[in-house]
Image (cartoon, rainbow, N blue to C red; front, side, top):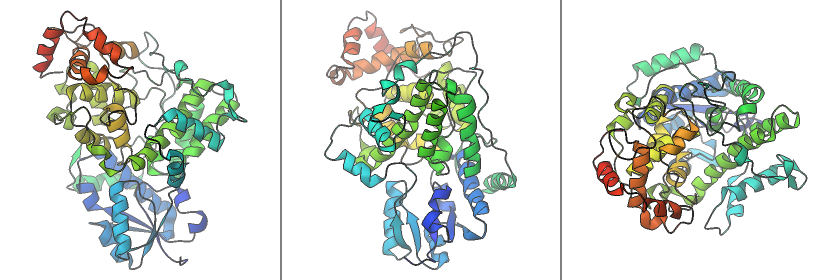
Length: 493
């Protein structure tokens, strides 16, 4: 490959490892494509983050960078005037596009992506002929492969999984965890220009504008990581599944955005958490729980996205076909009475982000119970969340949240009634619905909706040993007919 071949970086490939080493001498081409931003109804803050990240990368690269603002990527590459190098892109559509560009002579070669710890080829070897996948198997192999939280061949502390210590409800009587705030970047002239450009553009958006909350440069990502490790990781594991209405971030890291933009190396993140544990700064459960998210779950989702293929989003084992309601698409939190669901929608509206339990057990749980289309839901999560990219959501939504793949990814659907929400949050206090009520004006939409969902899918659920008990319990409900009739006509939540 010619030494002067430019390197094209997509908007989620902005870290230094993408353009250093063997590529440290190359011109770097960055593209702002108006067509790409106009194609879907993205969250306003997501567009801000992507444009800010691109423009900051161009500023950091200085004379090495050529930032092109064009209608399409193809138009930009034709303006370059010679073929470019690219790293493996992060979606099936982008991969097909890159192959088309290569056939047209606009792309010279495709390089392996350094965005993840485990290369795609090595995952293919690991997957082999497997038809069922367990994240635990993958996670343990990741720990061994990269020697993270290991004492020789054994896991530190003698246990691989400390989830049992990381499932505590929020502390009683507290409105917040009382931990130091997450890192907050300082907006600069680039952000000011981005905001002005978005105000003038005709891109279809949803959600509120707001000050940038997430790191978009390598330097910001380093500061965000340090602050999390030093001030927030010690309480992360214990309350990682808990929710408090007055504490939107809890002890979460807010590192998903810089990780997904490529400006933060996942292996470095895992090693920082391990170093904090070995230095006695944090407990093992906190370190292990966080490393499990980054080196385990996140990498697992990336590789399963590719392994399952582009048709995976068509999976619909539970035959859920209802379109997303207008209030959901518009993030109209005021249209919802249930305090937990309203707060989750407001969080997406105001920040483009809520942590993984509101995503799974409030938003995803509601969608599962009400039979919303998994494909529509996947698209919504990918566009309405600031950390949502095409590869992130299919396995998380289709597989984990909606069980639409029939169990290829998760062994059971993640459905629950109001009791779970009441145990793991403070939302039920002050809510017009009661988590224990199944029928009547105060019937919790999650509790009543859960039993209507179990009844609708009872044949499939009773064949699964992890959900068969729910079907048996449903048979003992004296008011089941009333619940089913009520939920059949429910139009408010």
